[in-house]
Length: 210
Image (cartoon, rainbow, N blue to C red; front, side, top):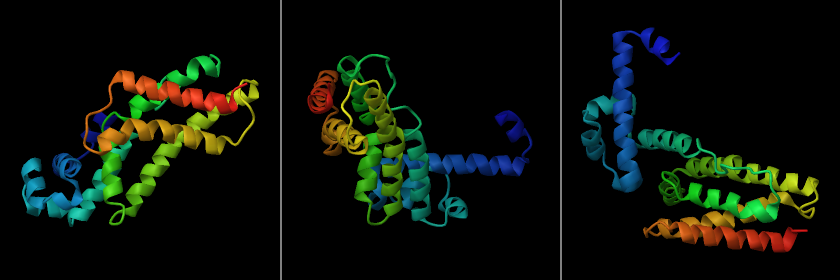
């Protein structure tokens, strides 16, 4: 389908598409590395290997490039599932495994760098933070709510407000896992992610387990 779509375009349109992709590659790399304030159009031009005049033809100023970069990076960040395995096992067996998947997902790039970027630019680009929060709700909180609700229906977890518990549980795991990266420190190792997941599961089950 993509080949047919490209084949239907004129050489001029194909050249424009290639040029835009080239520019996008440049500003995504520079913004993710230097942030909005630290990124210069000169740096982006060099990284994209194209002139500033050509860049401004497609993106009128730096803010347009940044907004486009956020859209591209968020699509990438939220394309993978946070919960890889929804195993048909009781919560006492599987919850820690599910939360480990979440911890690993949340610390895999570009998610930590994207979070740091939208937080640092929340005043200048508030929509970026809102879109990130929506992505977390859609890809993390809602799926976790469905898992917990299933356990409530099967009588394995006490009936409670799953909106609150899913948000609290996912935030507990992600905040601990991402904290060092947000401060520019090394990513936590596997053993530390396992510990965070196990302790969060124990805390949840001590409150809602049957």
